Length: 181
Length: 196
Length: 148
Image (cartoon, rainbow over all chains, first blue to last red; front, side, top):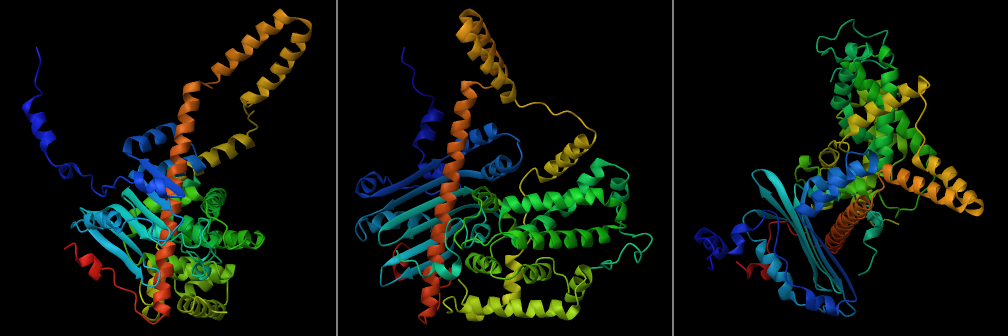
């Protein structure tokens, strides 16, 4: 005999997805069309389970592995979509705006919002706060030939990320402004 | 902050009323007491090392060496206050030595990536202006070793110039001069990044 | 970002230079360093890494293979048993590869995030130099306001 799904389950399935939205996480559009046009794509999708599996295997060793484990253990998810194009603005602003719209929610606070008029580029950085703790960060960088969205979910401190100035393979600050896009 | 003169132990008081007993216990061989001392001061030592050297693996190695050296020199530590001073002084001298031994590196050499990720998830610092903080920390690397560490002792550890001078065995005017010139340099670099 | 000319530099330095926690396990590693140093000074013999045992065994197997094939087969099996006993399993290898891939992806994400922070700084600095004031974080552009 065919059994129907229990009623509570049906009710749960009917609820909008937003009710289950994870704090600090934004819904990323389907960028498959964008990826086809891009000359270079970076897609990173690491949810909590994947990060925790990595920690379990890294184990309590010292030095580098311990530091990596400590870093990952504080994160709930890491999501990156970055596309490079051969021509200027070969992507739709609608994709960018759909993400910025989600960041209007009360939990999100804008840290930086800068727009460059001659090249029509902008960078928006938002941080999520919940119960007095950071719950995530979103960077949306819409440049002439590159669109990048970074969503790091978890207890992340943008100030700490910013303190790495001049490192990480990026020129020191006094030279940074000389780079073109 | 009450500090012991650099020529301790002769000038140290016989007993520090705030001493929690960890130093004598660690000196007697109590590993748990020593571990508690490490927990108490690890943040200070590691932060000084990291901001001085700019590379987390080196900073961690230096910080570990400082504590190993502390263990071997516990007999010379008279109190908790003396201990903090000893740790800052030892970290200072080791960091200066390390910076002077280091070969010149190009400006684009990347920081250890793992350390970068660790720094990201330490959410204890709160907000502030992240871009400003980023810029200032980056500009620290333009300072010579001794002025850089003097600046760190002043603004990270909140020591007065006279305390810094006494702790490091430097003339007070030298410390003041280092601070004045360092701040002037940072201010000039920060306001005019394209200076010729 | 704050207008450079309006920055209270000393206050900004205090905020930027707040102390940082060392990586997790730092205290344990210090104690381990002390224990290691203690064992070395006591003259304790270190355990040989597994490879140091394997290398001479494989050399022996090679020589046997030339002269006594059956004995070489037996020795080879013994070597394989040793390798397995050392815990070098395929499953662990796969897990190690996946963990390393995850680690690499996390680092790549942070690298990209930092690069975009740099871009933001560059745009703010350019705007400041051109005479405009950097927008406060809570200012909203006309473009943003259309979503209210």
